[in-house]
Length: 117
Image (cartoon, rainbow, N blue to C red; front, side):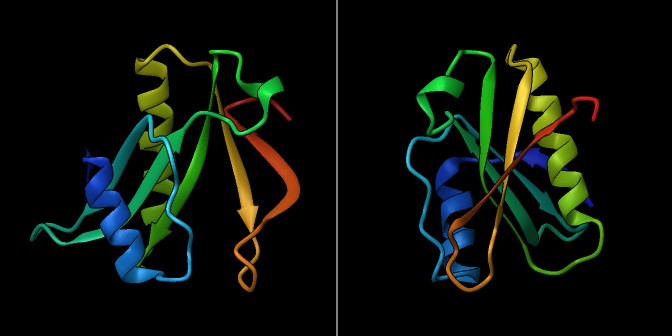
């Protein structure tokens, strides 16, 4: 598996193709993807500004969406790549939201990646 930065348009197209019911994210800060050895895209993650004004502090990025095709280990690779990308860009926090399968609406629990519990 190979992790790489990808254009937001490629990530959006993958999301639309694999999960047509998901809403496509608005303003994108960056997108990363995981490909197989033969170049097939098997997962994407899109990050952008937090929706909440209180969290939009210049240090925080929200993982807007992540979609995988079911290949093992891809989600973990996406999270690692997203974390490396935000560190490179000077951010300090990456927010993750859990989505319910039925409504595709965020649950009330938000987690912060990379911070001690």
